[in-house]
Structures are given as C-alpha cells and as structure tokens.
Image 1: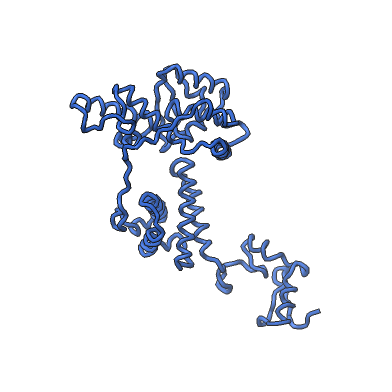
Image 2: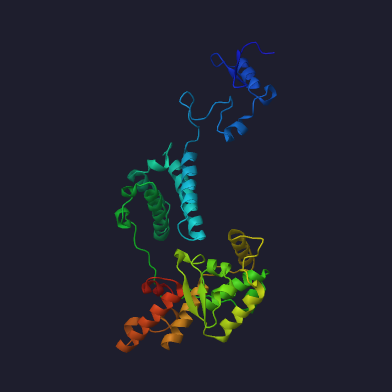
Length: 354
C-alpha cells in the first residue's frame, strides 16, 4: 500500500492532490492511475479527449498535446473531407500531398502549426527544400497548387504568390512530339483476371475514356446508339460529354459491356468506386500494364488521322508549320473535335496527345 499520495475523488476518478512526487512515490502514483484502481487507460482516455487522470486535454491548467503538428495533419484532412473539389483521384492526391507538406514543415522545424498558421516563409522554405531535393518542376507545381487550395479554404490566398515564377520554378515542357500512345491487345487483356477491369480497359481504348469514367461506366445509360453519353458524376470536373460511336469495334465493345453489366455499372454491386479502383490497380499491375492513360493518347492520335487524313506529329506526321493554309484549317477543326471528345475545355491541351 502506498503512503505517499493523497487521494481525492474527482468525478469518480482518482487524482493526485499534492505536488508531483518522484522516484518510488512516482511509481506509486502511476499504479494509482492504472486500470487496477479503476482509472481508464491512457490510450482509451486520449481517444476520448482526456488525459490519464480524466481531465479534458487542452484545458489551460494542463499542457497542450505533445505532438501539436498532428493538429495540422488532422485539420488538413478535415478540410479535404469537407471540400470534395474535383474527382475522387484529385481529392485523394490532394490529401496525400497536403499530408506530405505537413510532415515536411515538421522536418523543417515549424512546430505547433495549425491550418491558419500558413505564412509566406513556410511556402518559401518548402520550395527551397523541394529544389534541394531535386524535385521536378511539375511536381513542385502540383504541390504549390495543393498549398494554394489550402490557403483559399482558410481565406489566406495572399500567402502564396500567384505566379510560380516568383519561386524560380521553370515551366515544364508538355509538348515533346514523342508519342505516349499505348494499346492493349488480346494477349494483354488475357493476363487480367477480373472481367470488369478488362472491360474498363477496352472502353478506355475504344472511346478514349479516363480511368474513372471507364470504371463507373453504365452501358444501359451511356449507350444511345450512334453515340455514348458520359454522366457528369463520372467525369473530371463534373462535365457531361458525348462521344460518337463510329466503328464496328466500338459497337462490339459496347455490346459486351451490356452483357457484363446489365442495367448496372462496371462496379460490382458489393463494391464502391474506391474498392473497384483498388481492384483495377492490382489487376493491371499484376498483368504488367502501366500508364494506361496512354490509351487516351492512342485514341486521340487515331481520331486525328481519321479526321485529317494524315498522322499527327507525335506519330511521325508533319508539324503544324509544315502544313498548308488549307491543311491548317483542317488541323484546327480536328483538334477542336478531339478536345471535346476527350473532355478538355481548351483545344491547346490536345497538343499533349498529338
């Protein structure tokens, strides 16, 4: 029995009424605060917002949490969960980037931060850290975009410079005239065990769909005979669009999708999108298939040749400068058509594909 502590009941729990002891006396107090004396364990009380003695964490008479950086991580996650901007993939990538940024701020010595604590010095320190680590211009711009989103959500937009030039980040090169087109043939598809994943890949190839669009595809809704309609809830940016059905191969893919999905989608009834996305990623990885966005590149290049009569520059065709004035008009019209079919607002983006 310990004689070194005074015990006073506080809301049915035991607390130490005198000064904090040390040595053997401290061990006695620890025992008194343990589950043997009827006090809930520290882990359980911490989850309930209590310390080991039943007090609420964060009260003025108690020290703040030892790991206040986790407050920043937690608050950023909460902002992400409350603001569902963009597609699921965009939301997931943004939350991942903001988690990395919070961890990096901790590594750089910025402690006790909260979401409202963001200042220009933090952004500049992060950019210097990224540059020192050899991060590419594109990767740094993606991270700055995530920070700008964070700043906008907490009404601190002026913390981040509007131009990336302010931080000395060079422009990334989008157009290389190197083809990124990919195709999947019967042999590739045969390595994919899941029939719905195989169908999603075939839809990506036949219609230039994004991965999310091909996974959420509902043939009963989309198939309108001579064209397909993509729901706004499937697409990037929430913009519904129409893609023509032009070939027998496209019709055959749609017919098979009908037989496979019936009146549902290519997501099984027992799964949600996130779960089916993980199945897609696992199946394509196991089959040795990567960068399936290249299927959209192949669609754009094939469509360009169909509309113009010549191959695009990325596939060995003439550059725009080499075209005659009449050919340039055909080129511009084809690029606009492809831009709409791919779901891009600006025809200039099609240059990445062509």
